[in-house]
Length: 300
Image 1 (tube, rainbow, N blue to C red):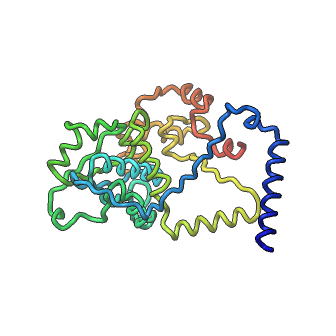
Image 2: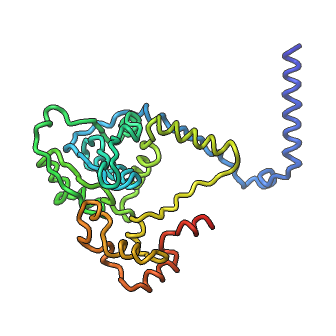
Image 3: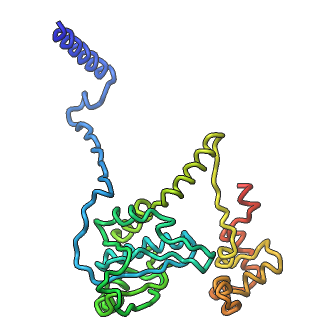
């Protein structure tokens, strides 16, 4: 009895399906030359923590000290992972800047999820917390890599790679903008993006606070989060003094903010490549090339 009922229901369902399909006037039914639509396969990404370790002979150890604000340090970490990957290096957990902008004692593990960072990239690069005992007493070569460099600066036989073969442990004292943003291989860009959007996750306690804040904001109504980026460093870098007082303009144009923080004010001008005429700064503002003031930001 149940078999008959199920069979009858199946036939009725198929008849209705074909009838509705005929009424729909599908061009695929009328033209035999039109191919059937090929379904797009659903790609299921593997769990990052289940990826296999990449096996390779390491050419040396790379220590890095990330400089700048948190955003600059994050971008620098993406670059350093990429450099370590394509030079077959072992990367030590990056050190975070604690002195340039604020007195913050936070280490990498205090800001980011260290375990996830190491394991999610294990199919690309080996990341360790410290030098092995056999390398702990070797002489470390400190150096700042050249800014805005292409991959050739690191990969060719006459620049960085030979130094690792000689010294085995190199300490990059700066990480900001050490790789050019454009004109580099797609593989480089892909790995940088993977580090940025997948491997670098906030530590659990920071993520929990963020989730709570988002939940509170969502519970009332729609909301928007806006970073005005109206800070002294941004103004100093852009060279825009429009709407600043005479005292503020003098401070931005005659002092290097970064050198001032190091106790060496006035060592060099902020942007020596920019014209110094006042009308240039006004024109820059009119072209929307200057940071928005808080008043304009709120209005937008």
